[in-house]
Image 1 (spheres, helix red, strand yellow):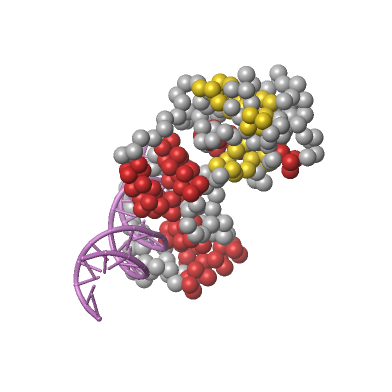
Image 2 (cartoon, rainbow, N blue to C red):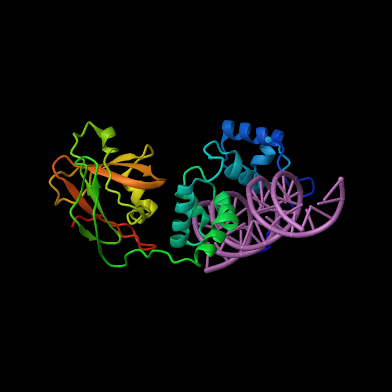
Length: 256
DNA sequence: AAACCTGTCAACCGCGGCGTG
DNA sequence: GCACGCCGCGGTTGACAGGTT
């Protein structure tokens, strides 16, 4: 199949967008959405190809785009996600709200790649491959837990011992313990979509039947820029969740 | 002050996936 | 099953700004 090159037609504009063009595109999409990018520029009265409009919208004009420099936490997340996902910029962008794949790609090529190459000359602390002992700080009791085995791909969700109406206070309890736990929360999108809704909180009703209370609630919030899960259950102190993060494998929640 | 170099980032290009007829 | 069209993705380009010589 021979594909006609984009913008081959005479008269279609290329290059940087003007504020006037931006305004036309924003107004049109606000009014009509973008069901068909190809026909959009004609309907909106823009001398651009649909591809150019889509790119301008998704990379620059979308209202949910976060402008400005990347935070250290975002850069840290990009590095870790890139390690895991490779050059799948859109997949990485999906895990960084407000950032576009183009932006992430740029920041990777201009900053992070160089920085990583520099760091290769200095030794890096290796993360545990099998198990190791860690302690978890509980903000409720203000105490460190007893040393416990830490299994890669598994995370302990500890109950903050609050009533079910007191969701907000759940955020005061975390079980993070440094970087070792960060990786746990970079799991497949399907996992997150199952357990929490758009407002970053959710209820999972089909929790393993072996638990005393079938309803477990979660709240997710970024700590140091990394998603951490907060969960509680009225009848149990904590659960262990088994998060299988192997590429292509659906995360599997099991109690153990 | 001018030329050159380097970094940044918006935008483009081409490919592949997917849906549809 | 095939042809076609649309869309999204990743690689690349090129304009521009700021720094250096």
